[in-house]
Amino acid sequence: MNYQERSGNGILIKIIAAAAGLVAGFVICRIAFISFTMPDASMEPNLKKDDLVIIMRHVTPRKGDIILFKNPAEPGRVLVRRIAAVEGETVEIRDRTFRVNNGTYEFPWKTKSRDRRVFPMNFTFRDNMPAVKIGRGSYFVLSDDLDRGFDSRSFGPIPEDLVIGRMIYKR
Image 1 (tube, helix red, strand yellow):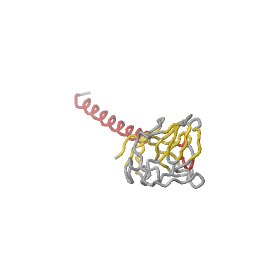
Image 2 (tube, rainbow, N blue to C red; image 1 turned 90 degrees about the vertical axis):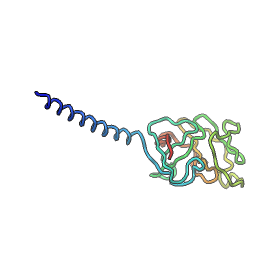
Image 3 (cartoon, rainbow, N blue to C red; image 1 turned 45 degrees about the vertical axis):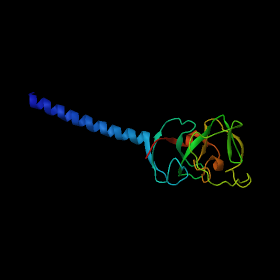
Image 4 (cartoon, one colour; image 1 turned 135 degrees about the vertical axis):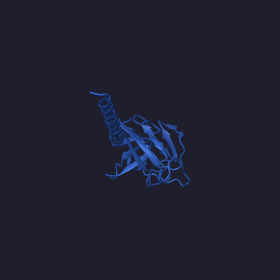
């Protein structure tokens, strides 16, 4: 075998390896990541309508993480919300004050709330909600817009098997 044949084979091997690497990279990205465009303003002020978010699949989310999950009230739809409480914690809302384990909880993230009316519990759980203990493998999720969100105040804690992934990037 002469030099030209050997160098030609080397170039072909490099091209095949590069192509295989690109295909493997695309496959891994499709398995590990999802891009999602915010459909509404329920996560304002932190995420706005039409913001692009990148969701990482197959991770265990923590309190404070923004997650993408299957909507428990509407099969086939997904929601983006923030984890406000995790298993073992007790959540309660009294006169618009969010309480965890019998103590007032100050959100370490920005929230939005302009409506100062306080609705009674028999009308909605938005402003007053009885104590709920979060069960094993479940999360209590909230919208960052506390006035308009459809979240665990409406449908209860979500089981971890509904979680698709957590947000790692927004644009």
